[in-house]
Length: 322
View 1: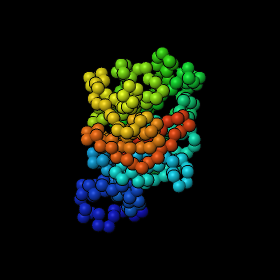
View 2: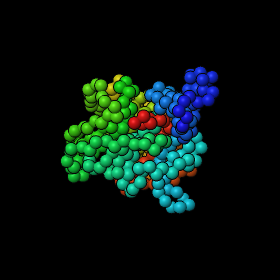
View 3: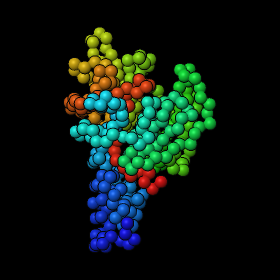
């Protein structure tokens, strides 16, 4: 790396340089940090990291699908990044994502929250940026493990835009009520956490074994999706509710002609619903506005918890400064 500014860089206004670099994939940007100190400092700056991420999110650029995938030729199961447009495999993920008990709890702004055992409070929980091969480990909890299925744990991960902070919520509940919630923040929190209870739509409870529930984001709002079965009509369907003024409002019902036992798995950045069928084995994309179905050709694999791990992913430089 050059100890001074790049040759010719003084003739390029910084705003133009930032505009050009912010369009590039992360792999190229990491290489360019070795060009000179000026470029390294610029790419690692909070301003550039935020600009690069916002551009990717706004333009749906460098967006992918991360899925537990069965590779047909090798008969191996692994987490793989697929193109959000062509659905072609782009990267076999090796960093941290190994072992039969790995589970992805969520993905946000290029960070993936994962742990090695789904219901074990003693297991380590990671926030991992796959693009730059960096991760942080959350501090261990001091909570005793409770027997399953009498008690269950749930992990949620997301970004709080108002506080500009990433949060991991770990909840412990019995069959009747929530017992405790542990909150981890990537940055030092500047505000107290306030929780509210929201009533689910009546149709969501009780939930039979063949129903799957997904909580996601749709056009900036929290949404709830549940697969269900109409035994009289012989059809499966997915109901979708959107959170409006602290209550869920029914938005639409999704039907896939000729398909049965399909599950909602994720909503992409372009607001398309990823559906697994039958019983989650194959992945298709459903346009919620045009109702067009696109076959992806991706064969999913079930993990040891009988879940199909499929999430959206966008490249970012988050954690580069850590």
